[in-house]
Amino acid sequence: MELHELAALAYPQCGAHDLSEVFSVASGADHGYRGVMDDAAMVSCPWCGELQELWLDPQTEGEMIQDCDVCCRPWRVFVSRDEHGDAEVQLDRA
Image (tube, rainbow, N blue to C red; front, top):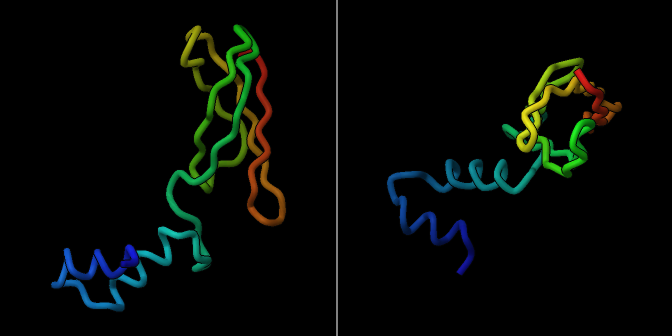
């Protein structure tokens, strides 16, 4: 049994159209927008060198400050996006 079929049994109050929209967005179908928190980058702390996963909001672009989860020292994070909206992340000591 497919996931959407199980969901239809579990949530009969939702119409088939409602559930198909939910599952198409969850599966990454392109509706002209991106899901929440779907960009992640593996980065290495410029202070302690620890490799970490950095999650970005899909609209994040520019410069921000964030602390390392391991050593708590601040990073200067630079986020740029290509023509497809894919993030490029660079770190420096803040």
